[in-house]
Length: 393
Image (cartoon, rainbow, N blue to C red; front, side, top):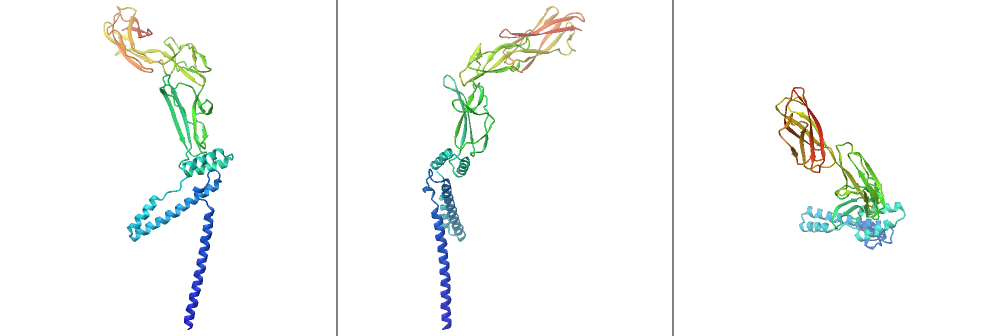
C-alpha cells in the first residue's frame, strides 16, 4: 500500500514537471511569435512610404526564414541519404532546388533609387545606396561616356562608348578620348549634351548613385601643329586665319595645312560653336647623303675604269613622296660618264631611307677634280640636289 501510494506521488510529480516545461516552452513560442509578428513581410512593405529600417528588417526577416527552411530541408535530405530512403532524399533535393532566395524586385529597386536621389542627408543616402547595391541584382549604377561623329551623308565615321559599373560612392577614373580618323577636334572633357564640361580626362570622381551619361565636349577653335618646325598653336573662335610658316632650310617644300580627312586649309578656317578642328603642316624634303665610291677610299677614283658611286636618299619631311627620279649631272660630260643612266624609285615613306648607285667612268690626270651633282626630282616638279667632287687617283 505504501509502495502504490509512492508510485502515484512520483507520477504526479513527473506530470507536474512536464506541465511546467510545456508551459515554459509555450511561453517561449508565444514570445517568438509575438516578435515575428512585429516584422512585416517584404511583400507587405510600402517601399515608397515605410522607413528604410522597416524595409531592411523585412528583407532580413525573409533571409532568416529562407536560411531556416534551407537548413531544415538540407538536414532532411542528409537524414534520408543516411537512412537509404531514396524517395525522401530526392524529394528533399528537389525542394532545395526549387527554394527561391528572397529578392528585391526591379520595381522595388527603382522606387528605392528614387528615394536615394531625393534624400537630402548625404550619410543616409550613402547608407541606403550601399545596402541596395549589396542586396539587389537590379541596382548597378552605370557611368557612360559617349561620342559619335557623323558625316554629311549620315554615315558614322567615329564612335566612342565606354561604361563604368561600380559601387556608388567608390572612386573611378574618367577615361581619355582616343584619337581616330575622322575625330579631329580638340577634346575638352566630358559633360552635358549641351556642351558644359563636368570632368576632365584622367580625373578621379565618385561613382554616382544612379545611371549617368556623359558626352564628349570639344573646344571651339582650330589647332595648328607642325612636327618639323615645332610650331603649335590653338586659336579660339569660329573664324581663324591660317598661320604662315618659315621653312627650316631650302630643302623643305611646304605643301600646306591639312586635317585628318585630307582637307586643306586655305586662308581662313571656319568652325561651328562647340566644334574644333586640327590641321597639321605637311612638308616634302629629301636628304641626299652617304655619297661614296665602292672599293676606293673617299671620292678618289681611277681614270678610265668603271666605278660604283653609291648614295642614299632619306625622306625627312612629313609627307610620303611618290615616284622619284635620280640623275648624276656632270659639269663636263667628257670627263665623267654615267653608264647606268637615270635611276628611279616608286616612292619613299616618311622617315624611310633608300640606297642606290651609279656606274661611272672618270677620265683625267692624277689630281684632277671632277664636279657633279646628284639630283632627285618628284613628279610635282620639286627637286633636291647635292654636289659631288671626285678626284682622279
